[in-house]
Amino acid sequence: MILPVIMAGGSGSRLWPMSRSLYPKQFLPLGGGAESNSSMLQVTLERLSGLSVDAPITICNEEHRFIVAEQLRRAGCSGNIILEPVGRNTAPAIALAAGVASSSENDPLLLVLAADHMIQDQEAFTASINKAIPIAEEGKLVTFGIVPTEPHCGYGYIRRGGAVGDGFVVSEFVEKPSLETAKKYVNSQDYYWNSGMFLFRASRFLDELGTHRPDIALACERALGKTSKDLDFIRVDKDEFMGCPDESVDYAVMEKTQDAVVVPMDAGWNDIGSWSALWDVAEKDSDGNAVEGDTILHDSKGCYVNSKERLVAVVGLEDVVVVDTKDAVLVAAKDRVQDVKKIVEELKSAGRDECRLHREVYRPWGKYDSINSGERYQVKRITVNPGAKLSVQMHHHRAEHWVVVSGTAKVTNGKKTFLVTENESTYIPVGVVHALENPGKVPLELIEVQSGSYLGEDDIVRFEDKYGRA
Image (cartoon, rainbow, N blue to C red; front, side, top):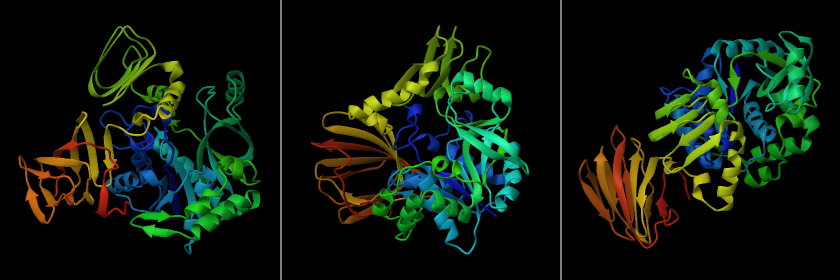
């Protein structure tokens, strides 16, 4: 049996303004076509349907825990969610998953996958995994090498050696090459793109990690020795894990072990690392334009235009990326999209929230959209999922007026608890303890008008919270 390990960390800064640190690309419906609402994480889980697998282990950071749990629920998927208190790269993350997996009586094969990759040929993906299973069962550490379609400078490469079953001994891992070197690699047919996907037994990985990087192995073992369960989450000890070195699995294990094997995969793989990568895989019109949303293009060629909120018109442009969101617009030359991360760095330096938050913010109970704001007021559209409840709370500086648009709200307002239905409203004065709950079977939507001298999200005093938030 295979135990999938889904790596769902990372910030995806090169796909700003859609991807932001508190809601990055792996949780967005990118690359699935305009008719697909599945996130990249959910598509990764769906990709496992052709394999015999257990419920996955998903690894994410603390800030994304409720997003992951909700997306797994919507995908009909259970399994453990390991929370990294801090990011320490792929080797420690996989070590945590291997430690959790090996704590049972079984010693499963771990299929390590990134949550933000695209695979266009499901059958070829499944076939490569099946070819790798007997190799991994013999104790080898398998990595999947993507058959290159062009001399690409943005990927690392793997050079193959002698045959091992349906794979090849890994002769060498190579860093991202120059264009001329990449051309030589592709022409030789001895090199593959390094996909970052792996298959190996949990115990074999831990053995090799202990041999080549005992410091990482020990830190992860200590962190796992003090785990705690919280709802669907496995929390490791923060202090022990913070002392773990930051290292990739390639550097820590795969480049050092004598048992690395590469299995070729030709499945339309793409790591969706930039807006130009999305243009590469998207359907295009006769002028080479790829569009999503409400767009009009005139006399334009080779463009990628994505609009989720309003009409976007493009006139007389070539090889340009235009991405429109509720609170930011990106316009970039297609061959300069790698520099989008520079914009994110500037936003961070300026202390602007656009690098972290969308105007629409997701919470464990649902989401809110900040529609408008002024000096002493803010208007939000709030959506509460069926059965969900906001914390029992109060505010020192603001009052709130709730108007139900659809569904039914169960409201606690001071000492009173009552139902508020469509076209009805209630007023929460400053300093009054209150709560909002959706007791129904359909989403609850309401308009919240806040007024007061301070409207920041940190003016919340929680008395009770079903999601364990401080």
